[in-house]
Image (tube, rainbow, N blue to C red; front, side):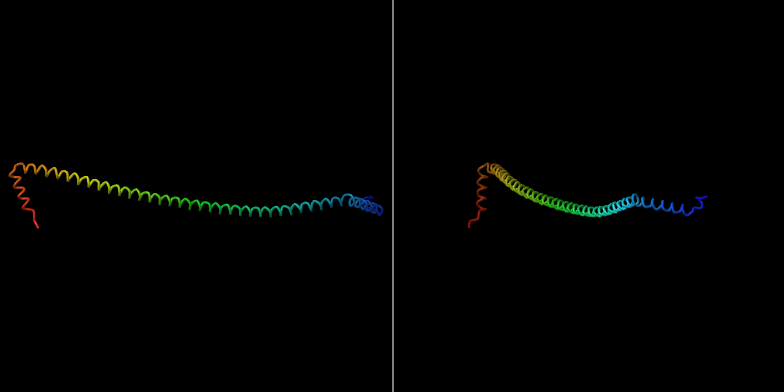
Length: 164
């Protein structure tokens, strides 16, 4: 029954044993465990700080990347706008040159047609004159085939001439 109802000696020896055990554990186990825990806590805190720092850097990089993307889009839009302007200018110049060439060809054709027309009219007049002379010659040959007709014709022509 000594264990159930401890006496004063047992309490003393148990307290002394517990105190020695507590001293040994504090000296050799508790301090290194606490130092390891503090070191681990510091490592975790540093890791969290580094993670926050990395997160901030990622935000800065993302903002920088967005700026670069925006600049690239603006540059692309500018290049496309310049290309459209160049294309429009080339089309406009081509239209102008085509219209000038068209006008030049039309004027040359009109001039050629005019010269051809004048040449045809001149040729037609020459042919009409030749035909008229041929017809007049034949008519005169028939009309003036005998001497009396020739004399009558000469008299008639002389009467038509007015002397001033």
